[in-house]
Image (cartoon, rainbow, N blue to C red):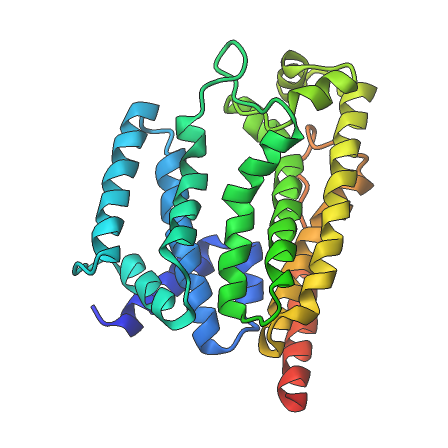
Length: 301
């Protein structure tokens, strides 16, 4: 398989699965768009292995270990016919993405397989926001750090801002997915935050199962939403620090994710009775504006 064919296969995966991310890929120059598709396909494969509920946790751990071993062999210079590995390795060489960052991407994906339940009845959660931040760093901030390697930047401040932008995105995901995660035995809402607002894990699971949502749950989610809102300011600061030909892509991605958080706030954080999303028309609107922005940036470059 050629490198070009490998990128085409990764693009097909991204087009099929990436949803919000793929809209931003489309306004990048071709070589950067290819790289983003490769990184996304890499993350998608790891996520799919970690979340495959047709297998037991133990079986998923084995499958993940085998996949990581195969990737390690490619990192060490071994041959592979895996399109994702071929494309990601080429992306690393083109854009200087370190092995450490990709290893952290995998580490973030496997956290849910390795974590011991924090409370009884096999529910996974986090004691406080500091613990949750570390989780967000591995599953989202590292993605941001890889992205800016591909986007390009010259100011080291971009790294911390990309980290915090990733946290904003992941907190938005957590808020959107509270119901689905609780049904799968995962509650990413910190225990101290639940306690502060007079609710707990059992109550969250009851609401996820159909019990009425109360004021404590709504207030608690509002508090986490306001924290996420604060991190979006980092995205605004990051935008002018990355290469001009990539700013439209970041703008599209931030606009869609921030729009999702705003829609969650608009329904007063009732993420139990409905799954909040940005409608396709809204995403296409952001894409259209992003394409205009990208064209303007090319003219003024």
